Length: 270
Image (cartoon, rainbow, N blue to C red; front, side, top):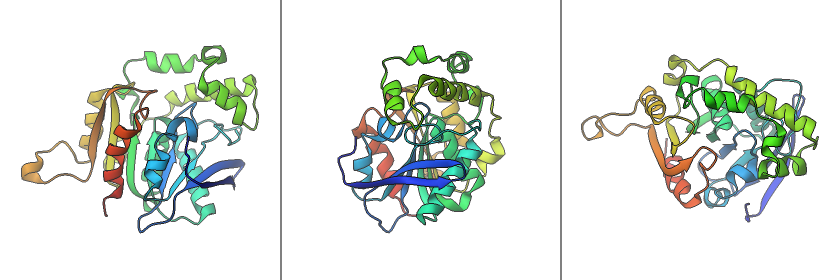
């Protein structure tokens, strides 16, 4: 959890009342927008790195639909819709452009921002997210998420956080959240043309024991112009980082390692 002084509030975005936090002070670079993964929230996903990012940048973090302090609505989870929620929050805060860091579900939303709202994104970090379902390590991932029941996460920080922060803190709504997370695996893939056409320099991060395969992470990098002989062709704007000894749920568990990867990329000039 962040120990740095910050502000927080709720922003009306359509039928959502989006919970957000702002850490750090404005600088010459755009704010960093943080988008967490499914079943997580701002603190669970980013609590270990917010202070490090906000030491020299303003950081804006939001709880996605149905997560943390943001209410749920009668709408499935779709990356394009959630990207629209992020734009609504930025408009509410008067922020034109951001560097966006998205993890897993939040990574998919970050891709949606970069694809559908390219003028709002300067730099993109897509962590532990596949742009196509084929990038996941076998069908067991989709099957496991699609069949999740509240009993399976009983006693976990995800359950405790949901019941403590949600505007509708009961297991019935938590099961609805799990059902929506399962259904997102049926959402259409991003096309290679869409990924190739992203304007923002992109950092792809993945754990070496992630749900997302290393082959897919490399394919993602190639679509973003990477995997070249930099000594002769120059170092591409887009990059890949493989975090050692790291699983999907543990992707940002080593703050020192994660900050050493993220900060140089995010602090680079246009």
